[in-house]
Image (cartoon, rainbow, N blue to C red; front, side, top):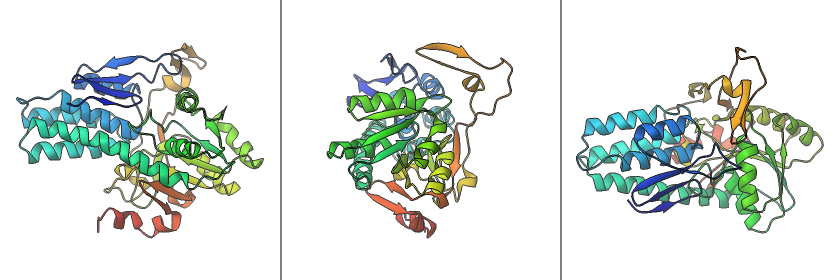
Length: 345
């Protein structure tokens, strides 16, 4: 396999390395992926995360841990383990579908399997660039932008989705400022988005998730950009928990609210948000916190916990979706434009 390099993933000498996102922002440690089972655990532990990046990481591991002697049944068994690692992020399923397709069509031609994984990497880089250019046109000089979770180079192998749009606008010379939701309970905004913004020298202010309403009431937020882990065909979408709250507040204050995602995030088999599975995570994540700073618990050990990793935002709360190379309005989404774009009828 070719050597590949992104902000949080790289392939060197046929070995796959993952930047351990659980240790950021204090420590940058690269993990050598030792097997498909190891990759599954890395995904489950959120050491690698972000819907596009999960799909690429899984595909690369599938290619690297098969060889000329791998049978079709063995390949499918490895793919199944990866597919089940994160149920909500549809990019994972879409990427693995393409890996299965090329393996079957080529009668398990190992070189073609490797090339497909490499193609998925290159495709994500290009999709990120197209989203960034399309979305940056929505940002005006002087805008204060609010974002949730992490949607940059730590969530993709390119510039990013929502954060890629913000970075692109900054690189165009627009004077912008970013409000960053902490993104409870795992603090992806506080740990990861702030780290990325500092890499790009973009001014930001970190806030708790429950402070966004006050900012909007005071007129301090002009636009909100978030990512997506799965988009239904009617424009409903799943994203990190807390996104729905933001959408409701934006609707009340008439603040434009956009989700940014590649076409690989659209689930062509899902008619509406009601059909999106939502992953439930460990109660320990809410009872306390852990990471490079240690472990702290602030709730009783046996406290009952509700901890969905994602929520679903209905299309009616969207201003629009920024896809690769285009911006779709709420009206277009409600008219079924996704189905026409994806040639599904």
